[in-house]
Length: 108
Image (cartoon, rainbow, N blue to C red):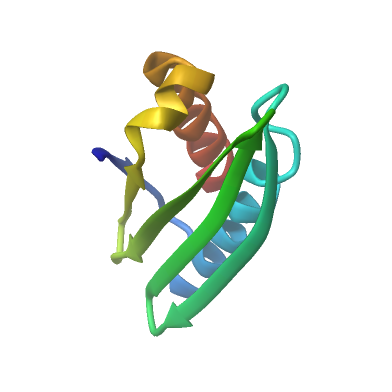
């Protein structure tokens, strides 16, 4: 299991950051990784913290990916627990790049 940890700054306020993070999860789980099907998406807000989980599938392989996002006054910290098998489907650098780019775009 590998952990991807990303921190991005924002100036949105907590409610707007929360709304945009919710959209961000939807975007990531709808075709962000070509050839990978994502289903069984779960999201749970607990105050400024979002817990997420989904199943990533490619061919016969299927693994659950868990993550969380914590909203602070001027930043968001994202942590994703990625099963090593996922990196055999999509290279780690590509996974990190997509996650970071889409998060940054949502927080602008």
